[in-house]
Length: 319
Image 1 (cartoon, rainbow, N blue to C red):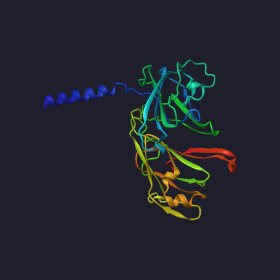
Image 2: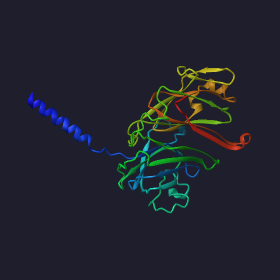
Image 3: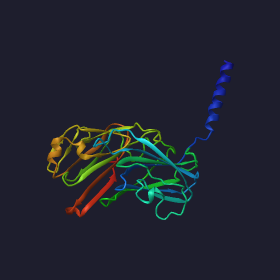
Image 4: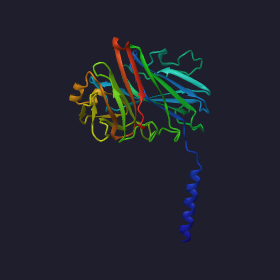
């Protein structure tokens, strides 16, 4: 018994010792929507660093083609591309993720020398998300001892059509690493959010969906299966504008990230009957991971609505 007691004490001492070792952390922000299509569509990213700082920031894009074989790429996997750039406190850097403006280098007459561009070097229409974290020169995360050193904003711009919308980056202040599971603002599996939509023959409605989980810095395999529901979050379908109800069960699997068109969540009957009226219902995640979802609606060169207009906002699980 005495020998076992000695071993138990040794184990406890070892565990306590490990508890005193600082865990490597870094303040990290997530930009859930990055859309680029040089030179027509870009995302202007701004990152502020109020310090403390590690001296470098690592910018990691997770991206994939918006289309494959002419069809929307909802369930395809992402690739990874990273850049490491110096940073200071206090500092703000803005750049064009497509490289259309200033070749992807810092914008707006920024006098700081970042040593290179920040853009995602791709050609064609791509969708993705971006992680920005404190790091060393080699890109390894560095603990700066702060849960709020970094903040971010983004503007998605359709340069060709002349329209834009924006959002704030997400900062996981409960875990300063690459984990974004259970974050406030992300819609959990089994939840739905009420929305309305305009006539399908005039307006395009799209949902930008980015599943989130642990280890967002790894090659993501997270998926979220989304579908439309009636007022009851149990029955699949949608409502029109004249008490008309449509029941169906159309799903789309989103892997990594995607921009899902509303019409790809409707069945043929609802699509035909709501073509010139629009309607309302709920969108939710029927299975898989929690996700950040942004609803975008726009018209292009439509004289009724003043030419080209768009609007977007983040869906919140509170409704």
